[in-house]
Image (tube, rainbow, N blue to C red; front, side, top):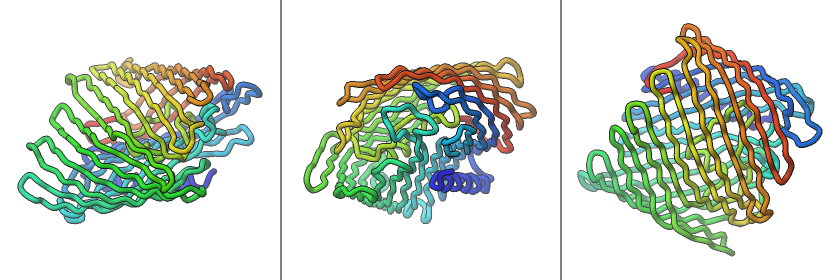
Length: 431
């Protein structure tokens, strides 16, 4: 097993243990599982296809708490996966996001900690597979100092140390940043503020100049019982001493409960980032252990993105649908410039008190600008779940993956059987 992957897996387990210690959590779910599967084309190769049995141990955690001294959001879904096919390393697969804010002096001095772990492909022309996957981690920590200028006006000074890490790809870096926010509470539910932020990016594994990253933006944020919105509008610039680039900064996220049974989420943006940095904005959980998508390229890029998701849950039926788009243009590497579009639809129906069944479809396409080449992937899945006494459960799943690509076509059938144990479930939410 890769040592770095093990290190971050242990960190996730420790975070789960810390979460369990907080009995007063608003939401706390913990599930452990063991899985066995089989793939008829484990490396998703166009030629010389090899089958493999797959075994996994893992779990899922969801933890939320909101008090004067601690705001915590932890979501993780990780598996340690072993393969019988020779030449494939055992590895940790899945995602973990921990976002903690400690009120050392509540409303005066806070300390923030963020850690996000996921995977990406280091060969962008090949499909995600156990032989074309690497761990990616983002870590950030630092203080927030806050003062009230009046009953409604406030100022915040903040500093951060951050690190972007890639298991295989070049581009790991340290980031040192600081800034100031001037804000005003418009009412009990909304805030308007202005932020200036400077970041120095130091690359640790390549001979590249440091990059100065400057942002200045206006933020509007509002949260009510049925909706929330956050919007940043401003200016951004990067400069490495030889070349510079600038442009508008846009970030938008919207969540709205359409009814007691349905909700809508939307996001859009135009900003600089790297692949590790995108993890902190949210994680799309992989459909199967060992099957993820994304990019391991560690370079800084300009990202134009947007997406929309709809969820429906009523009585015995649950439906989810989403679409997202990314146009990524790298600052120093035109070869990796790409556009990606993804569609996801899933449906699940309770067949009785203990049984449920579902189906999922995913269509994903990427186009590389310089090569005028494209990859198109479609996944179809069926599964059934059974739960006994609200603690033990089982799941059987089948997925068919099909790839049409200018770099070679391929397909894969994969089946899974999972046994689950959920010793803790507290709170109204379930991912």
